[in-house]
Amino acid sequence: MAHIHIIEDKNGDAVDQLVFCSDFCHQDYCLPKGTYRGWYGCIEISFNEPCANCNNLVQGILNFADLDQTLEEFEQAKIKWESENTVTQRIYP
Ligand SMILES: [Zn+2]
Image (cartoon, rainbow, N blue to C red; front, side):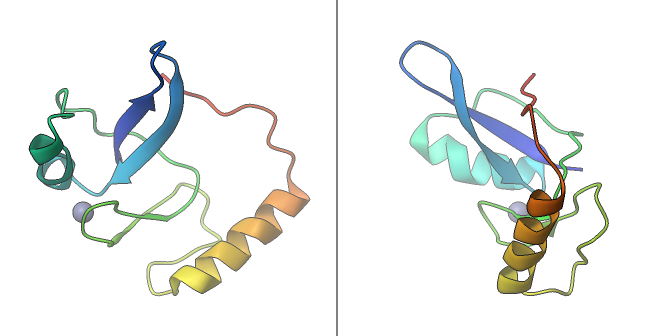
């Protein structure tokens, strides 16, 4: 389960997101920048992704990846998965 920080453009549209392992890391990363807007956790993500703050891997729900793999192995597995699966929509809340 991930904690998410949505990045919006000047029109308020979601353009990207940061993934954190915990609300602690979300606050640690965003509070100094003044961008923290409250708890936004318990979010399932598709792929393991490194926490934007502490770099620990946050577990994705697709289990081709494991917590012991390197970032390079993760990227290769992600590219392989995406080549085999058409991602038609990226869902933002
Ligand atoms: Zn973290």
